[in-house]
Length: 77
Image 1: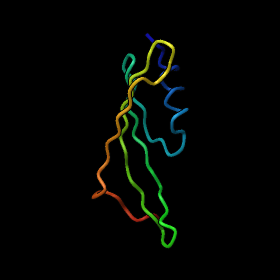
Image 2: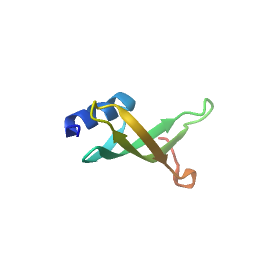
Image 3: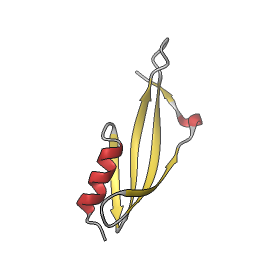
Image 4: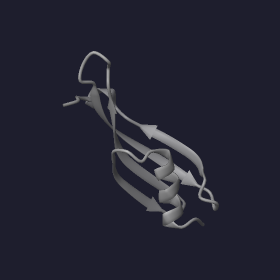
C-alpha cells in the first residue's frame, strides 16, 4: 500500500494550484480545489471541484473521477 506522502505527491503532480483540502485513506484520496477560468472578455468564473483518486503501490494514479456543478460557479473577482 502506498504511503500518504506518495498519494499526496501523485495528486500534487496532477494539480498543485488552488488546492483547498486533501483527505487520504489507504490508497484512495479526495481533493477539493478551485478552478479559476477566464473567459477572455470578462472576469471569468471560480468553480469548486472534488476529485477522487486511487493510487497503486508505486504511487501512480490509476483512477480519477471529478465532480462539479456549473450552477454553483461564481464570477471571478
